Length: 337
Ligand code: ATP
Ligand code: LTN
Image (cartoon, rainbow, N blue to C red):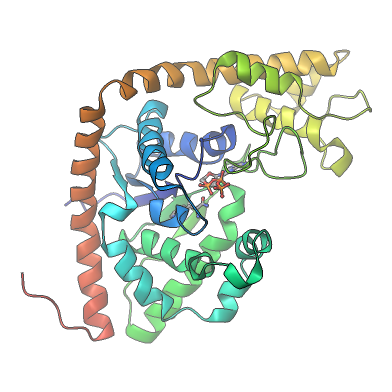
C-alpha cells in the first residue's frame, strides 16, 4: 500500500443524473488532482438512501455515476474508484462516529434543515440527520488530507474536521485532519430556471439543470431559455436580481479559463442571446468528448464491473487498516484474521 503521497477522497451521490454543477464543482477538480495526490473516488450510495430512492433506479444510477467518473477522465490505474456500500468499513466507522457526534452539531447542518423541511416532520429519516457522520467516516477512513467539493459542502467538511479533532482528543492522535478544496471559479453553479437556487441533480423541473449525459441540442435549448433579467448589461455581479446573467458568466469563466475582465470585454455591445450561444458552445465543447466516452463505456458492462471490483479491494485494504486502529483506540477487541 502506497504511503508517500498525500491522499484525496471525494464522492457523489447516485441520486439522479449528474449535472454541470457536479462537473464544475467536483469532477473536474478530481481529474486534475490525480497528478499530485493518491486519490479515492467513491459513489456514495449509502448517502443517497437518506432520502427515498427507487431500488432499480438506484442500482442503475450507481453504475452510471461510476461510468461518468471514467468518462470525465478519472484514470483507474492511478486512482481508486469504488462504490461506498462495497466497503463495509464505511457503515461501521459511521456508527462509531455517530456515537461521538453531538446532536446539536447535527441539527445545525443547513443541508439537514433544507432537506428535512421538504418532508413531513414526523417521517424525516434518522439517516438524514446522521448524513454528516457517514461523510466524516468516508473521509477519515482513508486518512485523506484534502477533500475536493463544491461550496455547498463547506459546512460538512467543518463538521468532519471538528469530529476528527474530538476523536483525537478523546482517544489520542488517530485521524488526519482534512482540508477542504473548493474551486476558484464555479464552486456554486445555480439553476438555469431559478438562479437563486443551487443547480441540483435531484431537482425535477425540465429547464433547471444541464445533464452530462443529455444531447448537445438539449443543453443548448436549456441555456437559450435560462432566466436572465431586463438590465441588458453583461457583467459579473453579486446582486440577486442579476444572478441569472452572473451564473451564465460564471459557467463561461469556469469552462473557458478566461479572466472576468477579458470576458466582460468580449461581450461589450452584445446581447443576452449572444452570451447564451457562447455559453452553450463552451459547455458542449467540454461535455461532448465525455458523452462519447460514456456511450462506449455503457457497451462494456464487464469492464466497469472489473474496475469497481479492484477499486473496492484497494479501498478495503486502506479502510480496514484505519478501522483496526479505531477499534484499538475505542476499546474493541480486534478480530482474529
Ligand atoms: P442532490 O440534489 O441529490 O443533493 P447534488 O446535485 O447537490 O445532489 P451531490 O451528490 O450532493 O450533488 O454533490 C456532489 C458534488 O458536486 C459535491 O462536491 C458538491 O459540492 C458538488 N456540487 C453539487 N451541485 C453543485 C453546484 N450546483 N455547483 C457546484 N458544485 C456542486
Ligand atoms: N455530501 C456530499 C457527498 C459525499 C462526499 C463524501 C463528498 C459523501 N461522502 C466524502 C466528499 C467526501 C455531497 O456532495 N452532497
